[in-house]
Image (cartoon, one colour):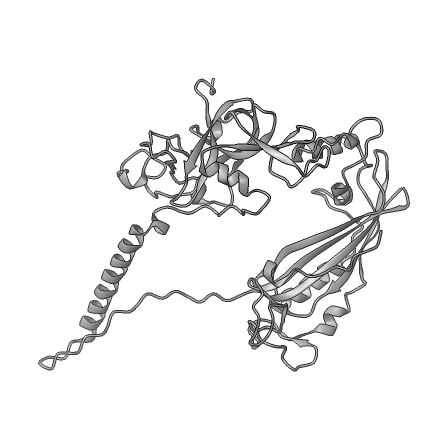
Length: 441
């Protein structure tokens, strides 16, 4: 299998800004969309006068330095980990079970991971490089992509060994997140001494782009009276009163706008592979893909069948009944949009809701009095823990969604639920699952 040269993320993927007369490509230098400064290899840290200059030669010196040598996987390739992986992602391919089972190729990196205790045989080259970039002001990091190449199947009993190296450090790039350097590490993985695959992992070490502060418009100064010159104390008191009045009017107007009345959830990513699903949601139908070759149902939507490989499919409408197969309770980070009250998609009046619940049973916070015994009384959109469930539908497929109509700490595995559609704002409806009548008991 031929090896593909690693490429950095595209401008569209990272929101890179082109300079005047340039195509949208990776920009150089610390300025947004500017051409490289002619300092011949010197990359300046953000805020030139406040951080030390860093030469590209200093960064290039780390290329080729090992981050792990003769590393050994903590476990042999084994059936329990393969089974857990397949259950977690819903992969039922017969190649991953039975006496001749192989491991899913995408588990390649899993066999090298050190767990919470880590690996004791790692070198300090990567940490040194990170500290060098930190000292130049590139203190943030984000993973951008990974590439894997598979050379042979992994089977239960294989002993995994690996070497890892810093493959490349890019010149200074400007992205929507900020200015920084891409670092690519390459891990060569062996199974019982034979080459098994290659794993490349790329991060961006960057300084966040400065945000323009939003300043309130100051009230216009009044002309001083010609009859009497106001005292300094009077001027200060008048300015304070005017500023307070302006802030109160601004806060009142902000509360009237939809974006401040209701926190908005992130928008789903809709593409040609899943557009049919979201079209069904708009019509209050939960559609499951079905392969027309082997009749296997699948969810989430995919361009082809995992079982037989056929690209042909039709849909089946879900009955809407299911059970909680598993669930998690989200505590952090807080996200008010997932715990703010929502309105039913059918426009029905909401009934009372349990604390922390998301759904049509949630009360309207604008109608709540300050003395009401409600989690929204003090702060209508205060974020609180909420339950996210893996729901097994009656048709046999599973999907992730919110569980509503019940306090987050009362959700249990095996609980019966039923489908409903929530209008979470003026643009978006989502399929969620409400605990069925008698499901709590």
